[in-house]
Length: 263
Ligand SMILES: *[C@@H]1O[C@H](CO)[C@@H](O)[C@H](O)[C@H]1NC(C)=O
Ligand SMILES: *[C@@H]1O[C@H](CO)[C@@H](O)[C@H](O)[C@H]1NC(C)=O
Ligand SMILES: *[C@@H]1O[C@H](CO)[C@@H](O)[C@H](O)[C@H]1NC(C)=O
Ligand SMILES: *[C@@H]1O[C@H](CO)[C@@H](O)[C@H](O)[C@H]1NC(C)=O
Ligand SMILES: *[C@@H]1O[C@H](CO)[C@@H](O)[C@H](O)[C@H]1NC(C)=O
Ligand SMILES: *[C@@H]1O[C@H](CO)[C@@H](O)[C@H](O)[C@H]1NC(C)=O
Ligand SMILES: *[C@@H]1O[C@H](CO)[C@@H](O)[C@H](O)[C@H]1NC(C)=O
Ligand SMILES: *[C@@H]1O[C@H](CO)[C@@H](O)[C@H](O)[C@H]1NC(C)=O
Image (cartoon, rainbow, N blue to C red; front, side):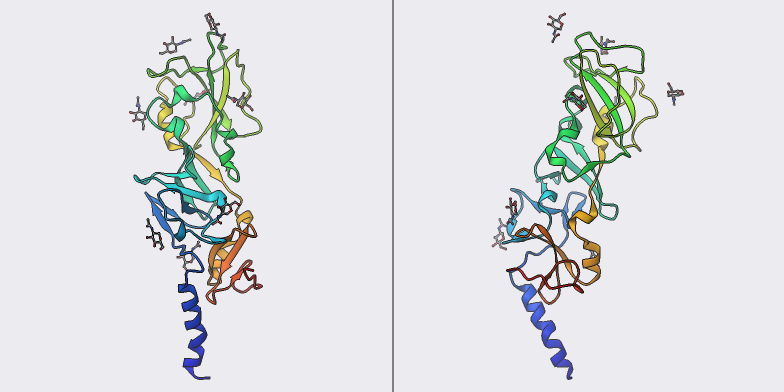
């Protein structure tokens, strides 16, 4: 066969990929972050047409990142800020805007991050440590078991803190609570102090964030698709992973696998 004949399918494929049929999903920057599959840039500051085209999207709906003008990334514009993404370990460091912003976060600890609906499909890693807070005690705060007065100058009401062990959503630290509002927050294990002291800087801990993990398997084997020469996409119609191959076809897993034509 002549070399030119061999080149024809390749040229056809390049022309097809150049078509607007599929979104361009080059990794995109947001501040210090590189946003790529299963994440994708959406939201009001972003031109949707470059992230999705009809049914094919650059990432999974749950992994939509909004990027503010000053380069702050959040999960779909919520209070969960994305500080770092580690694609190889399918984890990210996030913080909660309510307590990470400013220097009076400790006064606003009367909620559980674990009940944020937006966290799904992310899980708060057990490598975090849990810090419990007691708010609105109104003088009923219990004493004598390592509870620290964490009230900062900015707080209208007293706040008390207790440093627990490994963060476990199902088993938050059990401490006496008086008639206080009990909550527990994850902080990075590497940032947590050995013990709370009067000098503990809660604002710094909240700004450093906590580790979230996602199940790599649930969102397709992007590495295998990529290794087979494909690009990772999400098919919104079938709510499943799609591997876009150099022949312009979408396949279910890798470019060596079965055809899975959009219909
Ligand atoms: C969005 O993308 C479309 C298609 O590439 C382009 O025509 C349009 O000008 C873009 N709009 C903005 C606001 O960037
Ligand atoms: C936080 O979660 C714990 C354990 O589920 C619960 O007992 C507590 O009432 C929650 N606090 C708030 C403020 O919702
Ligand atoms: C808090 O304490 C004050 C003064 O003792 C009392 O008037 C108020 O009802 C208490 N509030 C609650 C919610 O217990
Ligand atoms: C806790 O600390 C705050 C600020 O230093 C102080 O105003 C408050 O009286 C303290 N409360 C208790 C119960 O020690
Ligand atoms: C932390 O607290 C434990 C138990 O109260 C104590 O044994 C340990 O010495 C403390 N560590 C530091 C670094 O203060
Ligand atoms: C606590 O940490 C924050 C953020 O790193 C910093 O701006 C602030 O000055 C620290 N506060 C104290 C009392 O060290
Ligand atoms: C895909 O592979 C290329 C190199 O072949 C690499 O630069 C890129 O980061 C990979 N992307 C993903 C999502 O693994
Ligand atoms: C994908 O599906 C979700 C949920 O069904 C929908 O909200 C979103 O707009 C869809 N995106 C595209 C690009 O069709």
